Image (tube, rainbow over all chains, first blue to last red; front, top):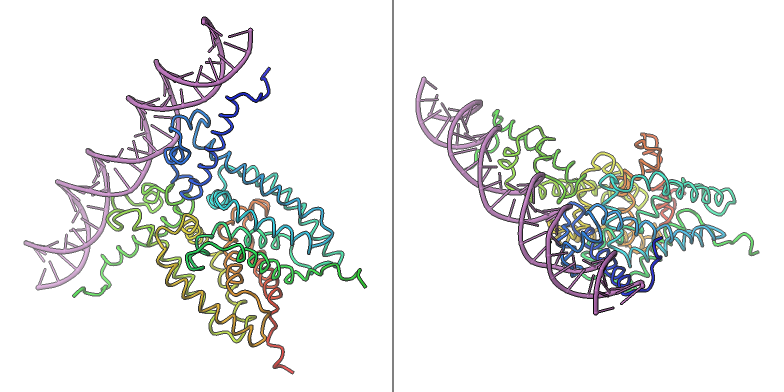
Length: 217
Length: 217
DNA sequence: TCGTTTTCTGACCGTATGGTCAAGGTCGAG
DNA sequence: CTCGACCTTGACCATACGGTCAGAAAACGA
């Protein structure tokens, strides 16, 4: 049946336009919220007529849903660092690095997600109840194992995860506030590095994570 | 000139209505965002005709601004715990307690603030540049003093403050996500207490804050 | 080249929104 | 009681929004 995506000019244009629209939508939804965003503004930012948006995405909700899904997948992907780590220093350290990097490179997406959750997750409630819950329980189990193995202090796994999310995403969601307190300038590369190190240092020390010390001697 | 607020029935009604409207507005703005909120919805929730809202607050922006100001003042007030503390254990500990309590009791306000900042702080940019910046520099100085006095490890004061804000406000702003991961039930009193303790334990340990030990012996 | 499918877009529509207004009601001071 | 100030509200208005549609244009397969 459906000839699967040949490399025709049409397919290229379609892909490119969808990319343009999604990028513009991510930015507009982040800056104005779902209610404040208008299809006209997204169209202008994408450089397309409004009617063309509705050709690719039937409704505003459909477009919004796609934007949110994109972000969620990026975050899930970043979590792989957690798994294949021998202990909290490597696992949580890499996770913080990854999430800080996402906050830096995808600040709009993070804001859209935050906005969605703050408004009661009307669009992605099912994700929260299935994928996110499963993911969370899985990592909580890993953390409990590390605790049992004496690799970190006995902290509540859920609250630790919340702290990781909160702290890393704060640099995207409240980026404007941070920028203002930084003299109106965005964080430089060095400042981002320092932020990462600060977060990692405090949290890893706070959970008593030891860099695989016991085995050395 | 202006006869200062006698206890007449009119003044009582005015105060009561303004209170009703502000409470409804805080909730609606938090749940729908500025763009998604409608004056009609706020009016319904306050139990007043829409035209009456415009009698007390000329425009949607004016009402919104009042809501944001309220929250900001609550937060500034909560920060007093920071000052009159001999060291980080008491100061930061009390600050975390206070901010967690605000997240619990004023979740809508916290969300409105978050939304405002995420959208680039169009309404309260001046607050960020003046009051908040001054406040931040003041606490950073306190933290540096504590570090100099050997009462905590040498961490970057700004990133520590960001971490405090992020972690505590997360329980309000992402309350829906936390509730979902908690089996769809809001955190109980015990769970809130455990959250507070978890946050305090990790952060205080993470910054190497010692409970005024040196002087005891 | 020709017919078909996909893409594009200006013009249009119904609705919902923020805000206005004028008329009527209520209260307090003297 | 009376008058002026304050409060209340249904009806109304202009605008802007999400979404539709018909027809033109472009790309494609044969």
